[in-house]
Image (tube, rainbow, N blue to C red; front, side, top):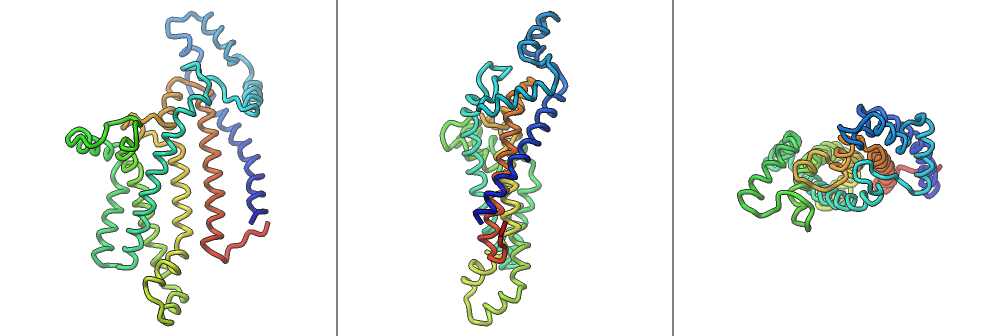
Length: 307
């Protein structure tokens, strides 16, 4: 197992290198001139040219990439063209709110999704199954921006229980986390139900029941554990997406997270911030996939990593 983890970590290096190239090229293909945005619409051509030279945008693209990678290896993510602040400082202010929102959203979605999916499978074609699947379909069908606005209207404007936006205290995370986690909960519930139904048909489940094992032992210890691999895969992918920031939810709730920062940076053609965020999101996905692969061997003893 340790050899496998070490091998995967080594594989991350070329992947991140390729990703850095793609991110850099993608960022510079965004229409618009950041030098013009920095100088202002009333600036002269000479002023714009001077700013472009100061920012190094007049150099060949390969030379700009070399400078970017050199700074990156030294831990320098650059300076924001929009605010003039170091990108690292901007991340410090935005990263933790996004992490907390991701953990809150994923936490309740995972627990409730597993419960609903398990009950739906155990009570197949009965009222808990129908109720659970109606809930799941509703959660997937509701657009995030619409659900967020409805929650704000009811619980913030009319009842005054929660703030309409911001990230001031845990209470401000409740409505965004519900909005962000609703679709994930529904997806996990459906995958749990489908996977568990297949596992309940397996021979080892019938053998356990024939030996007199109680359902309270068969379902959680044997059936559910062997059904979790596809669920873990989906949960890992969704967790990676959440870490990347939810643009819609953060916009609706005026949430100061990484997703909203990315949108603001794209609008301003803020190359250093865009490049650093996309590279960070890619790194997060790779780490999440590594954790998911490690969980596979724990959930299913048949899986062995020998190299």
